[in-house]
Image 1 (tube, rainbow, N blue to C red):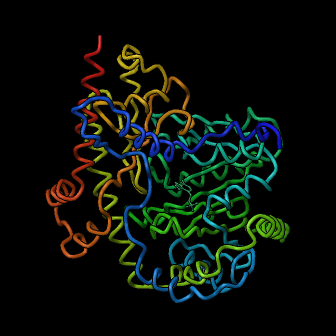
Image 2: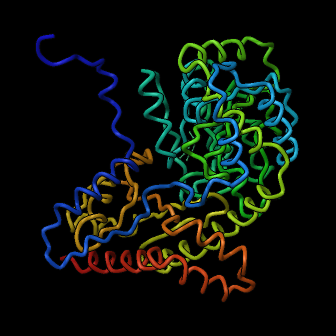
Image 3: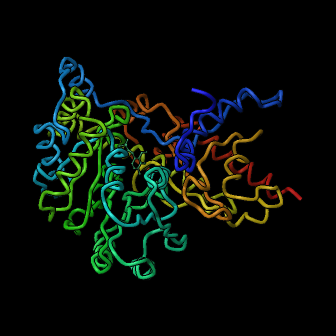
Length: 442
Ligand SMILES: Cc1ncc(COP(=O)(O)O)c(C=O)c1O
């Protein structure tokens, strides 16, 4: 081989995901920060991983199944698809035939396959989770960015969606609907979903309902699956990564639209078999335990979503107290979105000219605040916004403290955050200082 190995040009259109890139940037910063007074500490609001431990029954089941070294069915082992069907019935009132369920190595891979096999343009509402647009680009397909409005807390407005879809070329499309939403933390009501479904029916538009945060909805009864209101047009994806803190297990599921005569299932299985053969067999057997009724896992859901609620309420309130920042109020998951646009004049004066540069500016000395902004959230260059993840604490320890002595009043909750998440509390203070510094720049 002479010279450089040539790579297809579309691969150059994607970058390392920014939440991972920022991790590298932080370690670079630690090496590089020239200020002698710098303690190289930083405030980690960028990386959105569940801070908790894998629920013990799941970890134990993985050990017990370690010897299952055989290949298994590309669409998932039957026991697991049965267990996933039962789980969806118990928790969401969905009643999918196990034949409509496909198991994959995380929902990310399943989302990639959906984008791959479904014809038509992908509609990605912005702000968006960092994962969707690079996948569409990698497939060399087309996507349309649907900008959501801050005055509606970035909730999709059916009339706006109707107008947006009317402006697209005819034919089938697929709308990405992430609920609860990363990065804003909002949760759609059933009525909102019904209105969105009506618009989608009208415009021949499918929905990719990414419901990976469903069971982290703080008021758990408030979550409705899009699979209930638009069963004929919705792919529902979910998995073990967030509510069961098992992202590294790489296990997710997709429920196919209910009017599929079988060709979608066959296509899906064909692609899965071609690309990854099957999800690790021991993981699939362990996942049967993760989906079957289990009191310890139910308690785990209850405790972890309460901790997320307490942390999220505290952090978004603290951010909203900073003059110039408007934060969403999370209702599920472990993110909210902070709008910095009121500070745009001050930011430009400080030579922070784009939303991408906001991320660099926040991480620089002396602030060292790690966030995800700009292109990664599919924002316009002049839209200063940041995704804030509120998981920078020792999840296992905090879980145990909550289990033994849950806070009973709002004052207890405040104390709970201050004691258990001092880095996040200090991070909010650092952000206030950053804003003061930006405003003071002449
Ligand atoms: C909105 C959203 N969808 C999907 C994923 C991917 O989940 P998985 O680990 O199942 O691939 C994530 C993970 O960060 C996410 O935030």
